Length: 274
Image 1 (cartoon, rainbow, N blue to C red):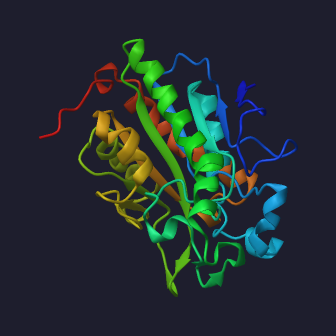
Image 2: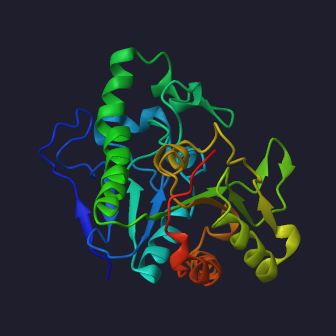
């Protein structure tokens, strides 16, 4: 069973009450693995005081609130590789952990055509309270795990797990999985090749349906690429992982293909960028 680190409930997170979940969850904090898994959009939770930003449960079951299935896949991969995983504890509608804070979509007033009442006309003070309560604890937890590894002489591989909608802007997305990356091919290139052999050439996107090129994919850019650490972002189509069976199947696909890549000791080095 995965061990879990829970953050100090007495710390001043201004928007999180004593009965609310912690702002971030760290699985396997004592792991000796060189792999660090992160999941920006693992949760659709809201603290009680925020009243779900005025949205109903039907809206919050949708992808606008979280990456459906991504957290569950992350948990299975953490168990398989005995790796540490950092999962954001709250919905991305409060603040999107995978955005720079000056990005207008960091505090979305409208998401996939749905107005978010609690995000209308946010003051600077309200945004700061969200950053302190949710955004900073998540990114600080990632940084702490990386710095701990570096201090022990390990250059960890960062694997970020997301999911994407089967339809967007009225168009079907045929990819089953996407591999997002920018300058570092060490994980993405063999992962794309291995997944194409496993699930079909046309089913695996290379920087599709989203791009991992700068300035996209903030979490990986900020924590891994700036340090020259091996990294990849993975997107799985949500209809494939919206059930326990689907989560198990796709965590299995990913785990089997990632295993020999992550087992290569030569992976864990700093990549010098020009």
